[in-house]
Length: 238
Image (cartoon, rainbow, N blue to C red; front, side):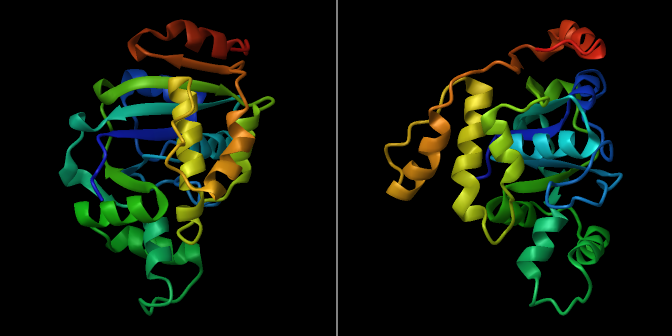
């Protein structure tokens, strides 16, 4: 697959707003949404090209945050030498063939400690489950846009993302829906579906009728969102 140039990081509203000043720091929220119990490694940040709303909603739900957030990242400001596999996806890919015993979380912990930075392995997990990891802090100047999503209550597409699981086993059945929701949240339009199969048209028809963007705020210039930060601080709705 061709490695994309734009990535997303799903997190909570307060963490995202801090990242606009300090960059996206490793270990500040939970890891990939496939790991509901384990924290992010202290040296890694997880990125996706499709499941941004899913990961953001999962992080906000687990932490009880009022807002989920999506940070849009310019890959030209990242160092490909720091790309590495998402260990939660990697252990699923190798499950049953690597001879490593233990629970999925234990197996992921094994790979977390043994995997090195490797662009090829990052491409493998991005293709298999829509995610990979980046070693170190992502600089603030790499953040192109930020989206804040109200979680109380979540709007329907966000609610769908929360309830839809993402795994290596099902990713190639659900990636298109996740990608479409992310595209709609970030760009205020649904992508063109003419080339899709009938089954995808059926699944997506349940989502594409949704037009109401109440509870969504996207800043095209994230250097200037202090007003959003102030509103979040006092609990004001978007």
